[in-house]
Each structure stands twice: as structure tokens, then as C-alpha cells.
Length: 392
Picture 1 (cartoon, helix red, strand yellow):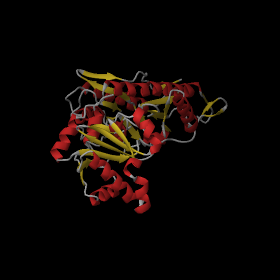
Picture 2 (cartoon, one colour):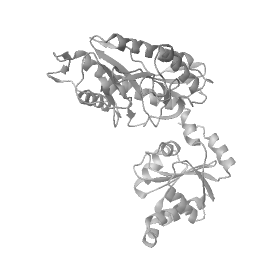
Picture 3 (cartoon, helix red, strand yellow):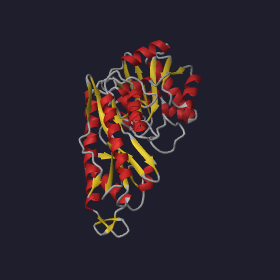
Picture 4 (tube, one colour):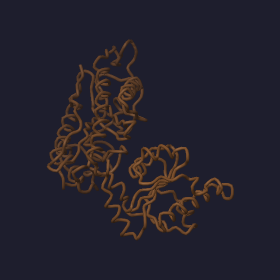
């Protein structure tokens, strides 16, 4: 993957900075993106228009040389880090080491992202390095436009996601219903926790993992971010929202389906039909040049016409459509661009979720979510999974 970093060059020129500096582990997605390297401990990436340079521990040096996209990799020991630790506290020793590394590359001033550590910035300034935060998270904006390789990484995660969703749906479809309306599977109560476990096992077998997922039933499903717990029940909505990360590429997938075991109520069906119509309206509006705000408005138009509250019609509502239509996805499960009231212009290469939903504790929750990439002439849906409500 060779991302186009020319917008970062322009931002550095506008800021009068010699380079862009990241000091973080690879859990920071900007770090992972610029360096092309994964390490659990903090390391240094310096980007300049002339190249990308890493400063790592001796432990990570060999891997960084072979795996990263850096033009050059240096070790902390080359700048006498251990000797400095004996003379100064560790923070100052690191600042002096980074300052020497920057000087070695002719860098006197650096720009950083908004999440750059304040203590590190202050320590570098004490060493005579100018540190300035760039406006607008330029690297995050660059990351939002995916290369073909990145789109395939997301698609790969989504395929694993589809397998996990199929297993979850299968468990609910196979479940029996007792006289109290509780679901049972293989002789045991079918709970959110059991379905979640099966989702996680399925993902692991396909090279993906996730910290959390959502299997929420009934009133739990009326809170968009309630993970769900306890027994699943017939006749109530069950929202399943899975957002795995591929362990090799670190790119995410994301998909939501809503199921009802048995016959849904008239109001649940009405809400589901309205949500599917809103979902289709969003996709119909999606094309390059349109704003995320316009796509979001298309969803609100449907819901409001059907008599449901939205945050557009009532900013204080606690029921109805109470979140944005979607978000970007990639190395982070939530990243730019936004498909929301403040969403900007969509471009080819933007990968976004489309996920309208309705929520009310007295009825439950309904949400449908697919993952799509904006193309030159519209969009491509990266999700190949059926959309239906009722499971017999």
C-alpha cells in the first residue's frame, strides 16, 4: 500500500514545519498508517517530504527493518539513549534522544496531530525543537480515502463478519421457545453471552477478533450501544452489531442486523419497514460529491414522514432516530468521513457505514447496517448478507 501523502506535504509547507512527528505505539492508527509497522510499545515516526524515518528500540529494530514502510530505521542506542537514562529521568532522556534523531535529519520544527502527548511536546520544546499541532487532523483525513488494497482489507474483514452473523442468525433460528417466551439452544437458555461467544469463535477462525460486540434484545436494543446481556426472548427485537478487526491487516468490518424470533408485532414490523426504506434512501443518495449531511437528511426525511422523531426534528428526543446515519471505517472502527448532520463531501475511496435505526424502550430497537465504498460513479456495497427480520 502506497498512500498519497501529498496533502501532508502541503500542510507541512503551510505550517512552515520541516516534518511530521508521531510518538505512539501502533494502536494509534495514524502511527500505523504512516509507518506501516505494528509494535506494542511506543516508537517514533518522522515523516518529511524526503522520506519516512523510524526510531525504535533494539527489540523492534529487525522487524521494523523488514516490515515497515520506512526509508530508514534507527535504534535508540545509536543516539545514546541508555546513557542518557543514567543521567536524566526517562522522559527527558527520550526527549533528548528524539531531538538528536530529528537533528540528524535536518529537522528543527515538527507538526503533530491533535493527540500528540503534551508532555513529549513540552520536553521537545525544552530541547529547542519547535512543535506545532496541525489543524484538522490531516493524516486522519488522508486515511479516510482508501487505496484499492485498503478497500480489499476492509472487504476481507467484512466477509469474516458475514460468517459470524450467519452463525448468530443460525443459533436464533434453531432455538426453541419455552412457555415463557425464552429461547433455548442445545438444552440451555440462549443468552446474549452465548451468541456473542459463538460470534467471537467464528471470527477467530477467520483471522479476526473484536473487543466487544452487540447482541441486545428487547429494551436493551433500545440503547444503540448497549452490548446486551441475559436471555433472548421470542417476539422481541434482537439487534446484532459486529465490528471485527482483521488481526493481520488491522482493518475493520462493520454490520448490523435485527431479528425477531417468531411473529413480530405490528409496530415492530412498521419500524423495520421504515428503517429499511430509510436505508435504501441513504444508498440512493450516496455518490461522490454529495455530502454526508445530505445522505443523513435522506434518512431523516423517511423517518419524519413516517411519524418518527429524529434529532433533526427534535434535538431533545430520546426515542426515534437518535444517532447519525454512518461513519467512516478502516484502521479505526469509527473514523472520517461522517455521514451525519456535519458530514462533508464524500469522495471515491471513502468507506462508510449506512446504519439507520429506531429506538424506544417500549418497543425495542431496530437497526440495519451495511458497509459501502464510494466509487467514481456511485458506490459498491461491500456487504453480501441478506436483510430480513423474522426468524421462524
